[in-house]
Length: 279
Image (cartoon, rainbow, N blue to C red; front, side, top):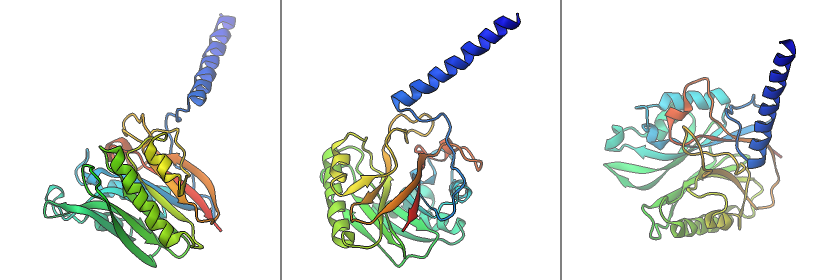
């Protein structure tokens, strides 16, 4: 009996090892991933499509803020934000969540007018900005206008966008405008420049190839970011502008576990975390 139990235990452990090895071979992500403790000297960036904070839970601003505070985020790119729109009860969403973070600075980029307000993208930062602006992107036959929101901080620049969701051709035109603007403004900057966002494009797409003309993908492409309750595709990323400024990537991962609450109910995307050390 004892020998049989030992044999069964050996087989069970072997099956687990094989499953783990197969997951590595196929590039699948770990079953559950949470943020590690932030190391000294590390700056933690997050990009997160929050689905206008009402995707599954009404007014989940506090949940998202609690999640970002839990992991010690220093700057957060947020996609799909309403500003004073009827569908989200007139809330300026970026201002609301930045306030819940303790009064963080923020930059909102309106992509288009929407229901008495606007719809767009934004960045919020623990540290006050030295410059912030937004750049309208060409619709180029896509479903909606899009925008790039940019925040320059004392030590680095962080920007976000949400590319068109129906047209690969529109995405490429939007990327070309992003590349042109950011090279023009920061191609000779002494600061590292980061772009986070929902690009609505998978790793092997023409959109990513066009981005790689000016940027380097830092966040990895193996782990799925969408949908949040069973991620199968990677469409949310962090990239760094190729302007010659070095940056040490300490960690990069997709997060699907928080003590603050159920991240699969906060939005239909999962947040992507990037830990960096700045020279």
